Amino acid sequence: MNTLSANDASTKPAFRSSRLDRAAPYAKSPLRYPGGKSFATAKIRSYIPAGTDTLVSPFLGGGSLELACARDGVTVFGSDAFEPLVNFWQNALTDPSALAARVASYFPLPKSSFYALQETFGRLQSSLERAAVFFVLNRCSFSGTTLSGGMSPDHPRFTRSAIDRLCRFAGNGLEVQCRDYKDALDLHPDAFAYLDPPYANGERLYGQRGDMHEFDHEEFRELISSRSGWILSYNDHPRIRALYERFDIVVPTWTYSMSNGSKSRELLILNI
Image (cartoon, rainbow, N blue to C red):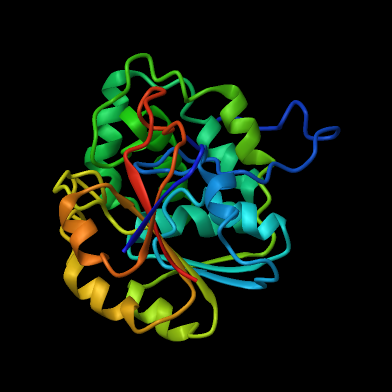
């Protein structure tokens, strides 16, 4: 193993972006997400080989790196096993203005409504409504935990400007499907892979009420060990270091978006 150091609601009027006519499309992630890499994008991007034209990302999450690659002309096949997240992305990619209009109908959101929306989310039938409520809960929840966490005090991330950015969202070059990571990797055997699986710490950060926190890290390691061309993001944990001891491990430095400015405690594991 080589360890390297790196420096580093429907009756209300439709929402109209106040800057829509003069602002460029918004091509960054509109979501907050546990383990989100919005501040690490440039660092991770620097390890993707020059000339990469296709990227597969089977743990899409907040999608910050994937959108950055798409902006650079890379065709990105994103996927995730968490259907509510995928449904949000598909609606945002298809008709962001319609999605923003539904989101605006919930603004501002009282605390009592937050927990009611979490409780009733699974009974929503409309794809658009589910996507809108997902976004509202995402922006209001602590650290973007959405369906798993509590409400952030005063929910300062659910703002008119956040809805405006959603209205202007553009994800050209990004495709999103609901798939298990094994199927996603099998479908794109020759694509470079960016892999950001659930943390190996047992925290219930993912899914609905944390129902996606269980993950077979050993099985995952066996599968990707036979594949070339990937970057893997993980939390710095003895179990992970042992599993990937024969690969190059980078100890990066970035400010972690979900930790109030604290430094990262993560690893980048490389098979390039």
